[in-house]
Amino acid sequence: MRFAAVLAGVVVMCLGAAALVSAQTTPPTITVTAGGSTLTVTPAGTLASGPTRIEFVRTAGEPSLSIGALKAGVTVEAFTAALRRSDDDALEMIDIDAGADLNADEPRWTSTASLQAGSTYVVVNTEGENRAGFEVTPFTVGTTPNGATAPRADATVTMIDLRFTGASTLPRNGTIRFRNNGWAPHFAVAAPLRSGATSAEIGQALKGGSQRALGRLLDFRNAGEPQALITRGADPVSQVRFPKAGKWALICFFENHAAQGMYRVVNVR
Image 1 (cartoon, one colour):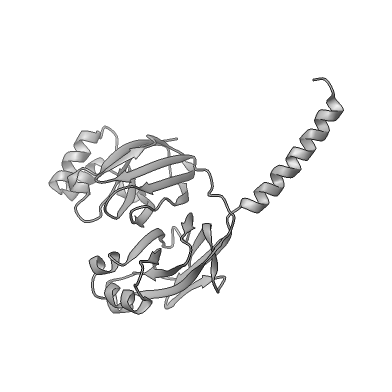
Image 2 (cartoon, helix red, strand yellow):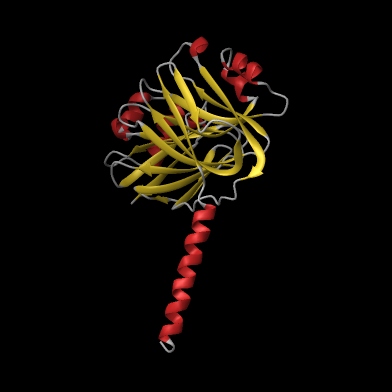
């Protein structure tokens, strides 16, 4: 510990530099507010590209929200018409980077996703069964980068083809990066295992499509959705909070993925 005074000065300088770097690289925040017939994105105007913190906020109802870039040549009008006609048609037109399903128990959700430069984005609310009422709000992302750095996640889970890989232990209260490296859209439902339930039994119940058998193995009353639907290449980092520690099953129920084995038992600590 020689030269204490010099070291102290160096520490102060380093801390100051670290604070400056942190201030320069923290992702900017946009807020998506949904409820009733309201679907807004703030701030308005053209956003800078790069890692961006997205605050999904519910004011009423149970919004089912997605945010993504329209593919080259797709207009907002064409996408809106496709969305109100068919999920499959709409998914062919968009790269979904993040999303959230909100309700009274989960009125707010935070994800950080990287916005693509020079893209037209849409926020979509597919709440309810009336496709004609699905809401679409566009915004644009310019070519200027925001200079931000994506946050470091406590754990990373990869969704690829029809399986989950990556971290086998997840934080009870922390951040998780869900990375879609597969060919299809995926999402993740998380449900705690009931006492004595095994991974093999869960797989059999999913394969057989028996809701009753699955309900005996998993406690869906305490289930949640740590990752809403995202498409290939997306890797949002989301703030998550599990109700309790223990063994949980991650399941993708998109189309027939669960029945084809897309689930994984993980430890939550």
